[in-house]
Length: 505
Image (cartoon, one colour):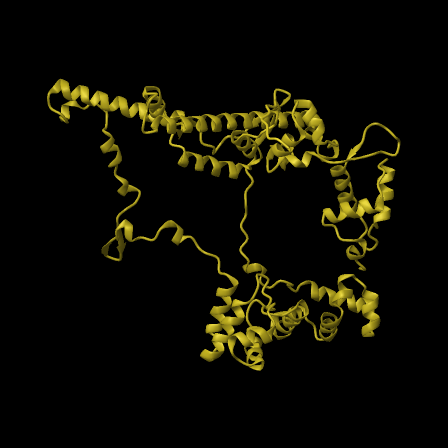
């Protein structure tokens, strides 16, 4: 076996770092793109944010004012003379030193005595003046300090409160908690009983049944609850028995089984469920801070002169450009630069040009994809969800001459503002369901979900529609669909089953 050298000519598809960057930018959401561009502005000195027209006009006016001021000073021979100022003009210093006391007085009057306000630096910041919602832990600790317990018991109570979850439940076993606190289980339970009397009612319960029972005891001890009949002396034992032993049957609305087990009537069981319905299964819910995230659309679809137009939302994105100072430096730099400055600047210039080109290509691709979607779903924008057509990525890819993977990246984490609301671009892609008359027109799965939701909304509460009945009703609309598919769409719309939707009275 001998060694030898061979030359072979072959072709390979290699993804360059620039191409990988362009693909990454294409699938980024709006917020992720803003963060990426801000990071590029920090890392690449050749990139800068272009000024808007308003900012450029301000800079131009300031430069013109400085040049006029120097010309007047040179003509009068006295720099800064009063007669050199044009009539009716004010210097920037005078404009900045406006009389703000008319809006923000520096003195406060208390009776007949004037108090000088403190310095601006001594005042709290705006963030510190905004009201902060009270958390569940803070609310319980405040009640613990007022409970009159001993310091050792308060330490145990702090440990119990610190182990509550967001719903207000104590999920940690008492044995493990007692071992960590170094106390007996009996001592821990005595402090836990005190916490059970705190507001909100049902807090620190170990399961749902205990949580509801604690709330029932609060209702029995509340004179308002007794006067309104929410607890009720006659229904009290029955309600407690249902909560303690028959929550599973109550969830499935097996009222007859509960009535037979407790030796009472179905009407009494149903009256007891009305008391249970007012209880809070998650006592910590009012104190759970939930952040509201606002969706900013990437494109706007509006009707202009009888035609649907797609507008790109570039508000909030920095307008990138090459820094003219570094561009001039690269042009004047020598090719035989020994310290590597020109090579460094050339590398950063290529990176800046590529990021600008990638952003432009991203915007063009999004406009093409959304325009194609609007063309396919024009009837949806005119009439609503009942006219949404089945659509797959392949149809849009063939329409604009791109690959399906590119369409998938473009539609990921992107949103559209249209007359029907703010919708994700993925919303317009759905499967097709055939019709019973074997016609070429098919109906969208989103439209079928909407039909199921409307059927359930107008159904008889005492006899709710089963999945088989919903499928039969859809067949009356010439829509062929199986019972399993109805159950799937119903669960996706968060619609309970017929047994859980049933009301007896």
